[in-house]
Image 1 (spheres, rainbow, N blue to C red):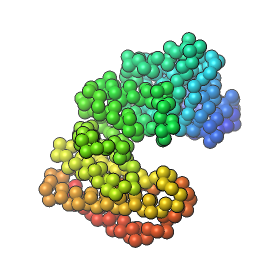
Image 2 (cartoon, rainbow, N blue to C red):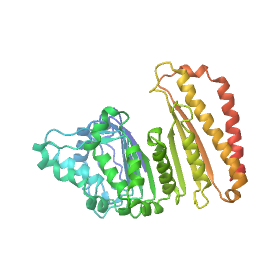
Image 3 (tube, one colour):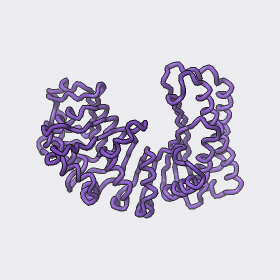
Image 4 (tube, rainbow, N blue to C red):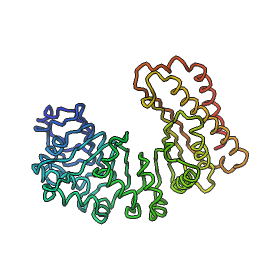
Length: 388
């Protein structure tokens, strides 16, 4: 029922999979060679495309196996579509008119359809907007900006995921022509148009602001039961903005059952203090229906100078201080908020450290800190168990 194909795809030319429900296409070199790829996918329910940066290859795949041809796929059954680490550049000729249309119809299908989950993970779909190509691609480009078409096509959407593909400012200017980004912005700005939405994952500072600043979203967010968002220091530029931001996040999280906050750790001292306060306020909310609260602290080292063990250590110390703030908050909750003990809550804390080097300099410089970490984690576990 589930299968993953890795490039090259011609290897599987003699096979047919009429009962496969979940298909993943993975490329290790950015290309999908699919000239002889099997085409019988009548039971397909989910499609994931991962790691390709050749738009021509994917359009060739769409051209050969049109999802709207009853003899290849049954698009009415397709429930989930995901693009992970894909980069589709703009086209510069009219050779792909029909397959480009199929690509757009895959993401914005006509009714009736069964599409419930849409994921754009670090992926870009650049709009083709050359004047002399507008007659070939312009009509479908404009559909990505038409709210009526989007809310009709995605009327059954229950889960939406967007992870920013723009890691640096060099590529920020490309947002304007990125179909994935602009479609995500339209969805998150008009949640009241998607009555079945239950799960939202947003890992983009720009789109997170769209989520809580759009007027119609306050009521729509009450139906959402699961949310995961990424937070960073750039969202808290000054005290007034920080106060508004925390209030907005609390509004978003008020009615949900599952909440995950992904926080990027900075090296500046006390950079996590406001986020620790936010987490405790969410946990202490007496009207909360939250059953799972997860915090993911991420430490990157690739923005630090090579060999900067002190910068990495500073980030680890901030995580240590963050944990101690939570411990103190749990103890206060035990004394002042006895109703917390009556409320079941699954609490998770993940600490992820990602280094570019296989043997970073900070490995041999933090033995004392590691011992303190062990004790902090034990105290954190105990204080949590006593409070909830």
